[in-house]
Image (cartoon, rainbow, N blue to C red):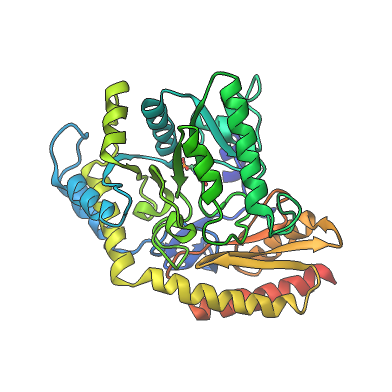
Length: 421
Ligand code: PMP
């Protein structure tokens, strides 16, 4: 039995293989993944290896700490404290405390309970096209799979912003229309007795298809949530750590002040590390209400991996790289959009960008999928995103270069020519 069949039998047949022709890398380095035949693939998809696959400084930090000490988190160790101080120094708005956890799902689960502890209310508002993780509580927010028994009465999903199908009918009216959705949700949660505990939002609307939003887009919606007594949770599992190029954090780019920020994926370059960053009084309220302990969260090896990743982001100036290379990539993709009518929109920020495909008025979902498979055959890895999965999502390690961009765009050009002929 081959590896794919064994994997299916063991891990379940719904575990994705991503491509028609499943991809099985055996080694990674920088922006490259290599298969068993030694063929290299340009990784334009993976945000977890934020500073590049197998970055030697992160590998070395993990190896050295693992060879020295790794224990549960009840013992005192300087690693988590030094990392936490260094990380929280990058936040404003009084966000000076943190809990280290092991996944973005856990971080969001804790964040929701923090909001409950502070507000005494259970209502949660998210968007209708999102994903925030896989715990029982957090999966209540996932738009694509309805939980058994339906969504809880404490959950409200508001229409997500979108470029080609904006809420309220036009981009100009979108912020107001989004806020109207939030106000309806608030009224319903108050009427049902849940009240508003939190608005949880990705400040880049990454899973929603990263619509182009102006600074201040969320201001009115946030004011409405605050007026109802709710907290603002900024889920930065995807846009955090400088990927957007202009700032370290997504909430800085939209210019709002969250009460809680959740972090994950890129935080330790692939080692399972995540965090919840908040104000000291929110952490205090949480610890008063919930007895919370996390065996692995912030253990010495995790802290070392996260610290090394943070240092590489700084030392290699990867936020600036994301900004410069991202801007160049958008320019190049705009050029391509003149050549292919199916490209209806080119958008993004930093090293998180893509193109949305339409055939007339119809989202070109099948074409997008064919493009992903065609690109994979041609040695470039990317994926799709958006309500109709008709946008190509490009989100490479932040060491991605102009030269890498040129390769991506020329392969995309060839792939479009092939799938459209
Ligand atoms: N929040 C967002 C916005 C995500 O995209 C994801 C994962 N795709 C998560 C949370 C969950 O993170 P994890 O898979 O590490 O639990």
